[in-house]
Amino acid sequence: MNRSQRRILAKSRDPRHLGEIAELHKKGGRIDKAEEKYREAIAADPRCYEAHNNLGSILKETGRVPEATRHFAYAFQINPNDAVVAFNLAIGLSAQHHFGEAVPAFRQALALRPSYADAHFGLAFALTQLAEHDDADHHYQAALMCDPQHFEARIHLGLAHIDKGKVVEAFEQAEILARAENVPGFPHKAFGILLARAGCPDGAKVCFENHLARHPGDRDEIAMLLAAVGGTLPSRATDQQISRLYASRANGWDNGAAGNAGYQGHRLVAAALASLSDQRADTVVDAGCGTGLVGELLRSETRHLIGVDMSEPMLAQARGKNVYDELHRGDLIDYLNSHPRTCDVVVSAATVIHFGDLDVVFDAVARCLRPGGLFVFTAFPNDDDPDAVAVATLNGLGQGGCFRHGADYIARVAAKAGLAVELLRRDVHEYARKSPIPGLIVALRLIG
Image (cartoon, rainbow, N blue to C red; front, side, top):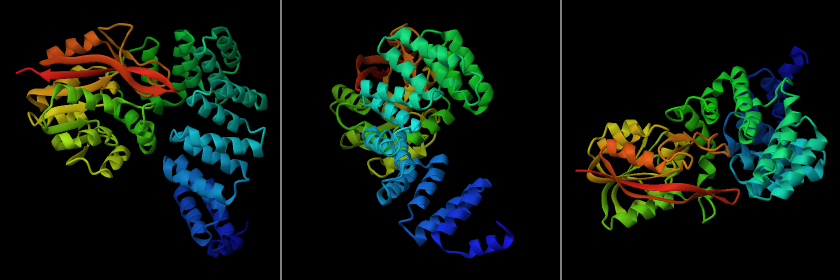
């Protein structure tokens, strides 16, 4: 395209021309300009499905998954006969853990393009999350039939074998993968998780180190994975790791907590507090308040309710519920330490799980509580060693920056901070793939 043609194109308001300009900007790395032109194309013709789809791709790549998914949905509504559009919609839904909604979109993509390996893999992954394992295995294998070098499909097929106790079959997949480790773009991190779960910690360690060498920005997550195979245990998941994790989960978090077959931490905390006190609390701090699930349950029983969280996307959800008297964005340890003797109760659902060393947590809570105050929280149990801390299992929890804490460890560290155990029992913390994930519900009281 010559300079004169570019000038003519630049002045055009035709949606197709605007899309072409957007593509030129995107190829040149000017993503903000590309986004602007796609939006102009949509304004000129709201039924330009290509612009919706391409804008959605930019939004997804820049971390704005809910908005991206809305544009993919518009594109699909306008043209349901484009396999890429259907696939993109399914990926957006899956990224927000709307797996049940993603499945029909994946199936539509495959109806339009049966040899679409990525769509077979995406469908298999969604079906796995829905515990439809036989159908999932079929689509993992179909993805490999379409593309034998679809490494993610092979890794997840290996993980599916492990979940079924088929260790020999899992090793067969691992052996095939090992022969491809030097292929550009090979997913060393995911392969390391497969090896770790197959009982090969040394091989997993090498894979994690290879990933880190290629992706130094992932050092926080890799530190957790290395700890799972014998490396140094981090004191906590980093702020960056947690921020990334919950930014991607914020919009779908409450959906995962609806009913009795999802996340249960907020209900456990509220029920434990109700069992220990029949009086309305004066001031309650919800440490790691997230989208406000605990706050909704405690609002009527609390005079002054304060929420603290580091994730702005999660806080945005909490603000919309109008249940907190105060909401603060920041580190919960900093907040607790800077507000001594200001509250009667600290609650924390699915937040302490991101701390390995609980000394700093319990010391901060003891500083913030008034004498006789309660700290009610959930944790994952360390059944391997009741007096120690470990990274959570690599079934998704460890990758999500979670730790496991032994019951004896909790009681010992709490006593050092002047906190006495009032309640410590096991219950179902959440469900993953329709299977229960055990948790600990703990209540500590400040002595004095």
